[in-house]
Length: 507
Ligand SMILES: Cc1cc2nc3c(=O)[nH]c(=O)nc-3n(C[C@H](O)[C@H](O)[C@H](O)COP(=O)(O)OP(=O)(O)OC[C@H]3O[C@@H](n4cnc5c(N)ncnc54)[C@H](O)[C@@H]3O)c2cc1C
Image 1 (cartoon, helix red, strand yellow):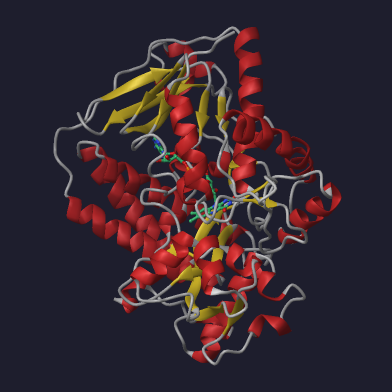
Image 2 (spheres, rainbow, N blue to C red):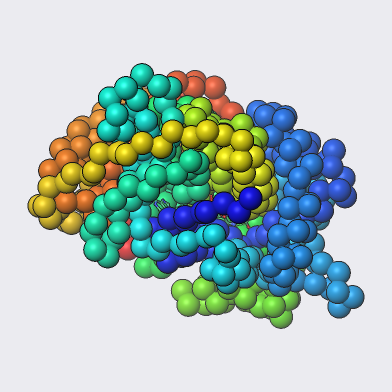
């Protein structure tokens, strides 16, 4: 049965997505040594992954990449002269099992996917349209009897950012695929607007959320005064790059047997300690084991972006520091994308099956997106074929006509980001979390009043969801006193109370 699908995209299709910026690659050959891959995922997670989710990824991963990315979309992954796929390695991986397209893997995948999706029968794409809130029988139906039914999602209110019009899309199944939360932190690798829209919307209708304290900080993000932050892929270390301090000492050697390729949480915290000890802003990736020609060919985008900031990686090391990168937690789902709310699914970074536990293994997330999308689509198709859906009319959206003050929105967003960076970052403590909660609660109240008194805009929706997501992360972190993976709680007298460098200091 052909389903009718509406894709709601807040920007142009595939723009504004973190997927577009994925550099390192995607795990492909899950058959090389599946038991070792599972061990690597579990080891990276500090022993906290959900084994069923790990099994599912390893079982379905290879077929998903083969059928969609290689056979159907013909993504131009790098190949040997023989035509075989090239493989690389990243932090926490004990084998070379990742395929890539130079250092622009996400862009290569999304540009081919874009052309494919646009022509698909039964799929309509709404661009520059933002999902505002989910619709449920109990909250939004015009039939008062529907409030006695179990919480069931029946679509979403959406805003056309061009016309300002808000309307309801009614659907048998609603799938959240809104990505991560990185932009609630001051320093991040994530795209603008990535503030946990799916998490915040799901929370407002009562969906279960899990593991939100587990925010992964990528250890190596380019950091130089007056320059934009951008990711320096772990593949740079996978190909031979070595982390050194300002004196050129490879400090990871004494910390972990995998040295510069240890799991991300360990590397990020070691850099943090190194920066506190040295008083420097950044450490460096030493590239002297690779030739300039190799670097330019293998990492053209990183080479170009560093050069634009005055760093020639064929001749000098890359200055890097950690930044918020990936949300391991999110909207709880089973392995077929079902959340705790009927007919509401979630996939990709906004969802959480427990695959990553407390810390994600590199290059598992694109694979998870593919696998969870496929399994969810198959389960939804079966449900829709078998099901009997109650889709009543819903109340029209009402909103005031007053234009919001963009300066206030900008200031509030800055405050959220600096609060999260300074108090809910790589190293947390009970006192810091308490302070963050106080500041964010006050902000949430003000933003709530602002929200109900003004015409809806994209930036106001971002702000409302950002403060909600930030509070949810703080709440989860406060409830978990155990340091595991990416969630590290220090004692009050720990010297790591010093916050990491902020962007303002670099200007
Ligand atoms: C710089 C960088 C490099 C990375 N490199 C790798 C890598 O090499 N390998 C790997 O496996 N992973 C990598 N990751 C992680 C991986 O890219 C992400 O986890 C993954 O792409 C998330 O995909 P997604 O579809 O869940 O979200 P996204 O790709 O972020 O897509 C979410 C989409 O939802 C839209 N959206 C959000 N809210 C709304 C709303 N309210 N209404 C309408 N639309 C909305 C957004 O505009 C966006 O288009 C990297 C991440 C970053 C930031």
